Image (cartoon, rainbow over all chains, first blue to last red; front, side):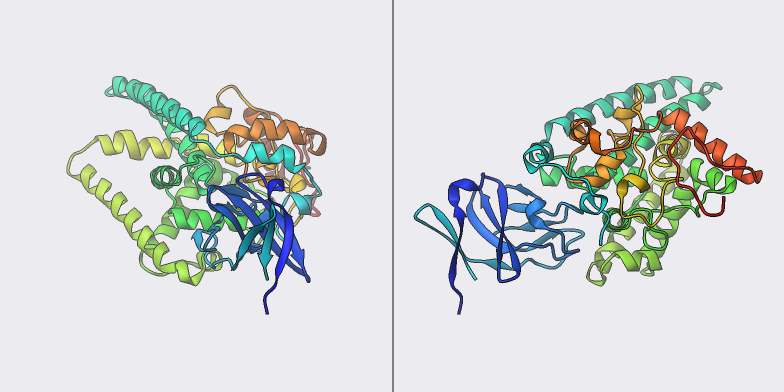
Length: 102
Length: 325
C-alpha cells in the first residue's frame, strides 16, 4: 500500500533543479520544473549514475555521465544512450512541503 | 564502475558546478557564425588558388578549418552541450557528423562507452591504436587515414545490416534498426556526392573531399594528445587523460577540448564553460602539458625512440611508465 512521505520544503528545491530522497534503501530524485514538482527513480537506467547530479532543463533531466535525457513527468527515455524509461512517482505539495507517494 | 569524477577522487561543490552546466544557444551560435566566416574566408583563398601551386597549402588550410571544427562540433553535439535548443543541437549534430564522417547514433553510443571505460584496452572503443604506440601506428593515426578507414568500415558494415562487434557491444539491440537506417542515409549522401563529382561537379572534390582528407592531420594532432602515453585501466581520469595548454587558435577550432581532463570529469559542462571549470578544478588537477605543437613533438620523439629500441620515456609530457620499458 503506497504512502505519502515528506521530502523537503518546496522552497528548498530551486526551479530547474533536483534533490535526492532516500527511503528504505531506495533512491529517488525529486524535481522542481517549470511545470511543477515531479519524482522519479534516482539512478539512470543506462549505467546507474546518480541523476540528482544531473542537469534539469525545462522538464527533462540529463544524466551527468553520458547526457542521456529523460522526460521528467513521464520518465520517458528521450535520447541515447538511454533507451529504458525511468519509473515515476506521484508528488504533491502540502503545507509548503513536497511529498512523494511510494 | 565507470570512470568519473567520483572514481577519480575529484570533487566540486554543486553550487559551483551547477551554474557551469547551464545551457545556452548564444555561445554555440557565435561559434557557428565564426566558423562559417572562417570557412568562407579560407574557402575564398582556396578558390583564388585554383590553377596554381598555391592550391596545395590552400587546400590544407581550408581542410584544417573544416575537419577539426567539424570533429569538435560533432563531439560537443553528441554530448548535447553545444546548444540549449534540442532540435538545433541535433540538426547541427547530423551536419557536423556528416563532415566528420561518423553516423550520429554510433558516435553517441561508442562515445558513452569511451567515457565509462576511458583508456581501458578491450573496453574503450575509442582507443584507435595499439599501445604503446608504434611509429607505424603514429603515421596511420596522424595522417588521418586510421579514422577515415575505421569510419568507412563502420558505415559500410552498418549500412549493409552487419555492424561489427564494437558496434554491437556499444549500441543496444533495440537501437540497431535506427543505426542501420542512419548508416544508409549517410552512405546515400556520400554516394550522391560521389555521383555529382563523376558528373563533373568538381566543387565536390575541391571543396569537400580533398579538404576533408587534407584536414585529417590537423584534427589528429589535437585528438592524439587526449590519452596517448597515459595510464591504461585506471579509474582516475587524471592519470588516463591529458589536458594541454591552449594555443592561439586551437582553443577555438577545438572548442576548448584542450581542457580534456576537465571534460571527462564533468561532461555536462558545455565547451564555453570549460575554462571556468578548469579554473575551479585547478588545485585537484595535474598541470597541463605543453601546447599542441610541443606535445606532438614529444609524442613523435617517444615513438621514434621506441621504434629504435631506445628509452621512450619523456620529460616533456606526462607519461605512464609501461612495464615493457
